[in-house]
Length: 274
Image (cartoon, rainbow, N blue to C red; front, side, top):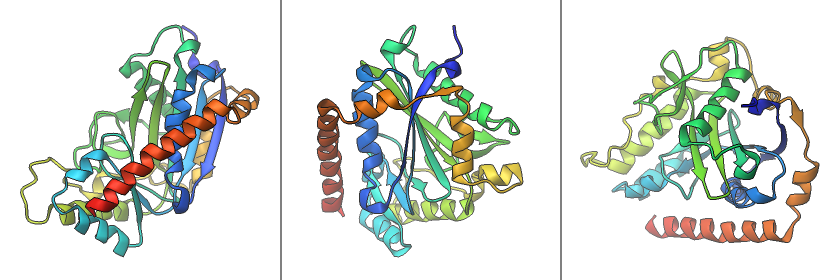
């Protein structure tokens, strides 16, 4: 089978602000629905300022309002993504990267593990100085089987969303900045959300030292822009012409509007519970 990194890929980069922080997942869902119209795989980068992205499971916190108040008091924005999982942080030291693989461009529909392996291959190629592996880092925030780690410390996490027309593999990667403070924030978020009740929902017991950044591991400065450059240049050929046309198509705009409505309804529900 040909090396997927030899394919031409399109690229979309979105530096987002809190006022439009829902855009990241609105675009993710709309792009996945548009897979049949893609002529190449897509590499989607996005960033957010001081935002905690909640997972659907976080709604089960018995004192969710107190947990959300804590985020506000520490000057963090928040919203809930319409997928499983748990809270993660996005700020100016975190890079989010998604890879879209339309089924019609593949020799076969990738299995769950094959799709994850493609993202792992990209990360390893982008940072060859590091011995990157996967496996759950239990005391990280949003722990999972495909935690991205070096020497047992987590630097990112991977998830995926699949449909009948393609798959998107989503990565958040801690590039630089105060990772200890990020861990402390999520630790305190869950402490406030649980109150004194037993943790029967198995929310993570976050140890701030369980996670680190790529820059700290490299022992040299690294910006989000520098990390993005490394990731995009794993692919040998990049061409946005056909993708740019897709984003102006009426069908894609309809998908955007549909997804905006769905995710906005979820945020309204969260506000009511708050």
